[in-house]
Amino acid sequence: MNEPISLGALDGVILDFGGVLYDIDYDAPPAAFEKLGDPHFAELYHQASQSEWFDALEKGQMDRATFYGHLLARCQEGTTLEAVHEAWCSILTGMPASRAQQVIDLGKRTRLFLLSNTNALHAAVFEEDLRVTLPDASAFWGAFEAAHYSHDLGMKKPHPGTYLHMCERHGLRPSRTLFIDDSIQHVKGAERAGLVAHHLDLGRGDFGGWLEKMGWSTGS
Image 1 (cartoon, rainbow, N blue to C red):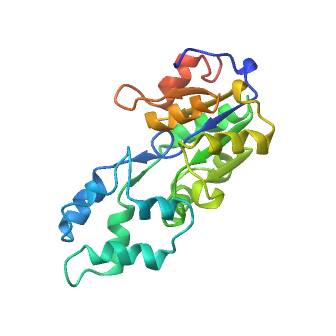
Image 2 (cartoon, helix red, strand yellow):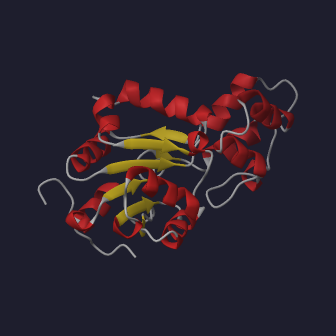
Image 3 (cartoon, rainbow, N blue to C red):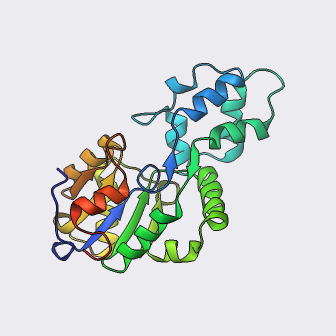
């Protein structure tokens, strides 16, 4: 796993979004919801797994009102929907402009795709954040031939069918398609689907370091 590979040996590259590109703080929502009266939020939602209604939200099978109703019912009396929304979105911390530029540069050298397990609530927040904070958000998004969210696809990682759907939809051969994710269960799902799968261990490096290891940095 994670052995350097030539871009010329690939049909394309599929990137995860949260963690790999956009910084995520998995500890922030549990801390925020504890302040709202729910000390057990982390038991329902963390990087490795989550409850059924979080999955339903990420598959586009649950609307905002129903989802926030679930969360609100766990909070102390007097908690507002705005406070619940802020706590839920506290997981999103941003993307440095330098990383966005790395994506732009990579998109000039290979077919590039994005595949993210996310929900419409978070997507609206991080898309607006990037619009405001990046020097050229349109160039960042334009680096991808296509960007796919689980709530639009109706399917999620790590199910092998999710990766195979991506490959079939875009004419990618799985054995010549590289997928990178910071969640090991998603990497293993891609491997089961026959893709070349790399795990980005954020405790040991970031996306830029991975690009250097691959020999894919600008000028390589």
